Every structure is written in C-alpha cells, then in structure tokens.
Amino acid sequence: MLWAYVWAYKGRFLLALLAMLVVTATTLSMPYLSKVAVDVYIAQGDMCGLTMIALLYLALNGVYWLAIYWQNYLSTWVGQRVVYAIWRDLFAHVLRQSIAFYEQERVGYVHRFFGPLRELSLVYNTFQAAASLDRIVDYMTREAQVPEPEHPQKPAGGFQGRVTFEGVTFGYGDEPVLHDINLDVQAGETIALVGPTGAGKSTLARLLARLHDVDQGAVRIDGVDVRQISAGDLRRLTTLVPQDVFLFADTIRENIRYGDPEASDAQIEEAAKRAQAHAFIAQLPRGYDSQTGELGAMLSGGQKQLIAFARALLADPRILVLDEATANVDAYTEAQIQQAMDEIRRDRTTLIIAHRFSTLRQADRIVVLDEGHIVGQGSHEALIERNPTYQQLYHRFERRCHAGGKRKGTIKC
Ligand SMILES: Nc1ncnc2c1ncn2[C@@H]1O[C@H](COP(=O)(O)OP(=O)(O)OP(=O)(O)O)[C@@H](O)[C@H]1O
Ligand SMILES: [Mg+2]
Image (cartoon, rainbow, N blue to C red; front, side):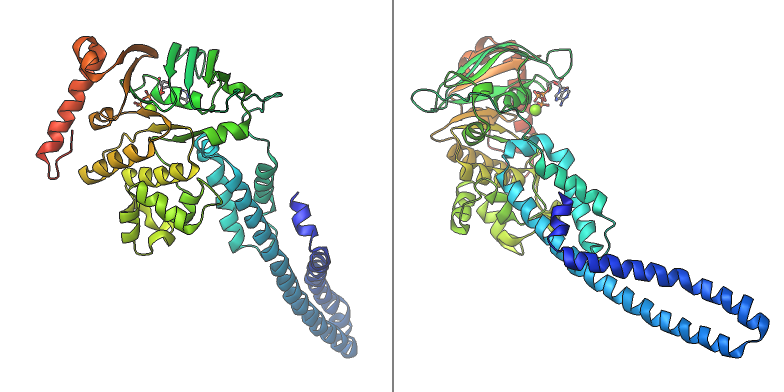
C-alpha cells in the first residue's frame, strides 16, 4: 500500500532512483580511476593518459554533483507529497474512528505512528523511513477491533438507552474480576457506581462500550445484546469518558471535534461552554488553536476531562459513561466538573463512576461494587443506613472533604 502512494509519482520516483544509481556508480568509479592513474599512467610516466584521467575525473565529479542534486530534489519532491498524502488519509481515518477505539489503542498506535511520521517529515528526502511507514499503512487497512455481527439488530422502537447487565461474568485472564453482575438502568437514568479501588468499576464501563466481551451472561441495550449491535450503532450510542483522558497531538479545537467530525467551529465552542471548558481554553495563549503537545503540564487532569466532556457533548450519545478522574482536582475545577456533569447527563442514560462524594448527589441511584460483586444499591440514605461497604467509602469521602476544607478554596461536598 505504501507503494500505491509512491507509485502515484512513478515518473519522478524512477528518475530519483536513476539519479541514485548514477551517484553510486560515480562514487564507485572514482577510486578505480585513481588506481588506474597510479598503476598504469604514473607507473609508465604517460602524461597524456594522466591528463585524460584527470579530465575524466573532473567530468565524473560534475556528473556526481549533478546526480546528487537531482536525487535530492526528486526524492524530496516525491517524499513530501507522499508524506502529505499519508497525513491526509491518516487524519481522515483517525476522524472516522470511535473514541472507544482510542481508549483501547491509545498506548499503542497513536504514539507508534505519529512518532515515525514526525521523523519521516524530517527525513523525507530519503526513503529510509519506509519500514515505519509500512506500519502506518498497515494500521489504516486494519479491520475494526470489535467483530461486526453478521446480522446486526436494532430494537423495534429504535434505541432509547436502557442498559441491562444480565448475569455478567468477566475476567482479563482466568480469574473473573466481575461475578454474575445483574443491573438494570432505565433510559435517561443517572447511576453512580462506587466501590473501592480494583472493585471492577472501570471494567464494567468497558464492557458496556464493548471494549471487551463478557465471558458469561450479556450486556444489552434496549434488550439487544451489544454483540448483536453494529459497530456503527454502538459507536453512536455510547461514549466513554475514561479515567485518564487522552488528548491527541493536535489543537484543542480538533481534539474536541473528534466527538463529531462534521461539527463547525461555533458548535465546538458551544460544546466547550456547556462543558465548562471554554473559560480556561480562552485563557490559553492561543486559545482553541493551542497545540496540546506544547501545553504539556498547563492542562490539569481535570481540565483534560472537561475537554473530553465537550467532545462527548458533540458526540451526543444516548448512553454516556463517565469514569471520574481519580487524580487530585483543585476545588475550582472540581466545581466546574460537577456543573458540566449536570449538563451532559441530561436527556441520556448516564453511568458515572464516582470517586467524589459531590458526584453522588447527581445520581438517581447509587450502585455499590466490591470485589466484582454488586453488594448494594439504592439512595444515599438507604445505603448509609445498612451497607457496610458504602459506609466505609462514605467515611473516606468525608475525610477527604474535610481535608480539602482546610485548604484554600473549600471543596464543595
Ligand atoms: N487491562 C487489564 N488487564 C488485566 N487486569 C486488569 C486490567 N484492567 C483492570 N484489571 C484488574 O481488574 C480488576 C478491576 O479493575 P478496574 O480497573 O475495573 O477497577 P476499578 O474499580 O475501576 O478501580 P479504580 O477505582 O482504581 O479505578 C483489578 O483487579 C485490576 O487489577
Ligand atoms: Mg477505574
């Protein structure tokens, strides 16, 4: 496939190859000429022959420099266009992928192929990077990760967003991390999922977005097993805002646009405003055009999550899964996150994995997960009354609140 890109410029590419051959030939022939000059003409004292050799040497040098020039010129010309074409196709491809795909792939591909591309841009005048390019091209031709159902199904009345976990057991290896999970979430309901670290909360979220398939039981949306829903439908239906948001090496604007490649700049700003991200973006030196790579530590984990919220608002899914950032978030950003959450969970089914007490207030129902089991569900009042796991969690939340209260800018609990 890489060849297809190069072959589009075959005339110049072949000329570049020819120039390279000439360079090689002249480079190799010069020592040979010296040898002949020494062995034959100098040994025999043949001045005429020696002059001829010297002239030939000069001529070869001329040819050599010309060939080098053309080799560089032509390979740069072709290289630039090939790199540009690949960038263009790669971006088109990236924009077509679901956010869920990145959640799964982010460690691997994005870095692996943007790295070589950057290097390639630097050394495009040689074809040495062809090996790395093959990897990119391979990525572009790869099938989607999740196998597409043979006969995709839709519920009779269209998707509403009811989510059902039906006897779900799942493990990453042999040991299950979720055991016989039964949970029914009504369309439009907001569920907060709480539990100690390692309880399986993020895993549950990943099963819903079908980043993994269950070992037993089924995850259903409006009664349809997610394995029977077409990849396109599932991508439109569900958005997962992961615990640690991944931003692409691109502008803030384009990072938000991943939610909906068709979105206009005005729509992007509108989404950012609703997600409480506009204020801090507007304060960045280059605003929406700031490159995430250049910002580095200027964006906190909480702010990255707000950008992901804006992305999710553009995607406008029926079902939203928010895996709240565990990292410490300052009180101001915390308040913004709560406000943004209130906005984005409206009119959709929302599963919030809560790491903060303030979040629990937004939920219609709280579900307590411990060591892969659902150990209780209900209102805060009911759970605090009789659920030991919840009581422990709540006291931990409370302690953190009080600790926060002593610092400047009290966390609202
Ligand atoms: N990719 C993975 N491969 C193997 N094991 C994993 C993987 N992800 C999670 N686990 C394991 O599965 C269990 C549940 O992890 P999970 O991330 O769902 O917990 P969590 O409730 O989200 O925790 P936290 O509150 O820390 O985010 C843990 O024992 C964890 O070590
Ligand atoms: Mg987690």
